[in-house]
Image (cartoon, rainbow, N blue to C red; front, side):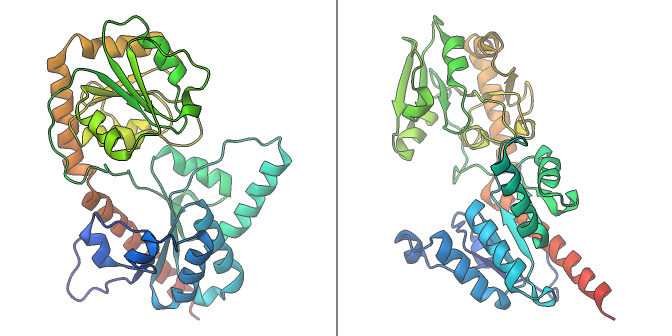
Length: 341
């Protein structure tokens, strides 16, 4: 983010740590020390308490996670005078699956609409979620900002094409379709999942399954893979981008189910392929393309790494978030001026 020397540098209060980006550490003030975070002091209750007590020292408060977002917004809505409210930007929002016939679902939506009515901005990780969230909370779509996620690979770099396909992840995974797609293929596959993700499923002989392993073990498997496969269920929320982007950070192209918002993280036939939802034939066809063409795997992997270095690093993510913060603050200042007699 480019700032002139005389431009006011906003004071950003947060409880979220992004130590991977010195730019974010310099730009923000965290209500917890590193030691406190390591010791687990940052519960939802304590996080909201500290953010709300220290908010007057800040120009903007950035919250993250469903519980912190909701309860901070609750305090801001009911225990702050409108003229004294510090803008809130809420990130890491996960849209609940629609169930309008359910009374509990309706009541939760009504409560969230009331509580979040004064929240200034929301960060979502895919473009389609802006409209879905705006409708769910009955708020102007302009309050919702798309902030594409980042790779978790600290230093993205090229790794050689491995000798197996790699599927991983927990949220909304469709391993049933994946197992059907690779059945009897003359190729090796490694899967990292939770036991509950694969409970009751028949594991093909050419699949090595690992459950509840360490993150470092997961990265070791990823590094030695040829490409990633991310089979997803269709939901009204984005998922899967973490594995896709971590693979990109090591030069691994991907095959991913075409679903909500994932198109922002894949360039068809450039960094990977889409397959159709719940369609083992479609997934198998895409897998076989890579199995029969190692040179294409490398070509797509290098393109994925190049894209990541330009758009999906921690610093790229932070720069985009800081731009959104400045835009939100500029709008907030304009609204204060227009309200002044």
